[in-house]
Image 1 (tube, rainbow, N blue to C red):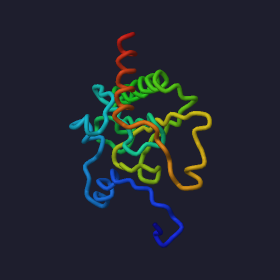
Image 2: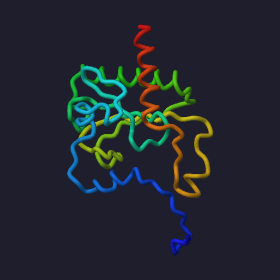
Image 3: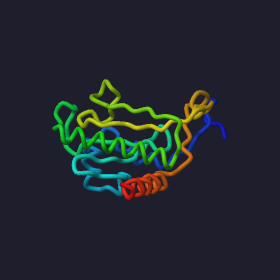
Image 4: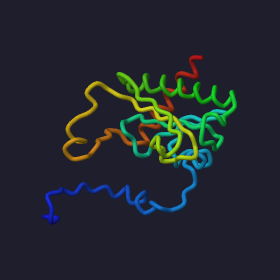
Amino acid sequence: MSTGSRHKILWTPWRMSYVARVGEKKECIFCEAIKNPDQYYVVRETEYSIALLNAYPYNTGHVMIAPKKHAPDLELLSDNELIDLMKLMRLILQALKIEYSPHGFNIGINIGRAAGAGVEDHVHIHIVPRWIGDTNFLPIVSNTKTIPEDLNTTRRRISEAIKKIEGSL
């Protein structure tokens, strides 16, 4: 079936809920995740921080960590909040190493829209596991990224790894 162009169609009906909400005033995903952990794929919550899977990941195991306090910048966090944030980041890194054995990580803190923050008024950390050779021709040729594992499975695996780590302390 021809679409009138040379493009092939890649059906992604699960994204319609996202597309339909573009432009709507949205509640902060991190603040919403605190209230609805299952809906937002939360893998761990601490006194001051929350870790959840990115619903539109760059790679399997892409986790975002945010303070529970709705703050646009690290400077607005207390020492206890900053320490908790970093401890949770370390725990997530350990869990990802156990479950996925990545060769490395990209870790970035998004502060503001210019930094690429989709949620620009709530500072957050991205952890993206990386493997040697994890890039291939699909993103280049067809602007398509493959994620080989569904989010529920990823959430379960990371959560179980965290339980193992915390049980060994």
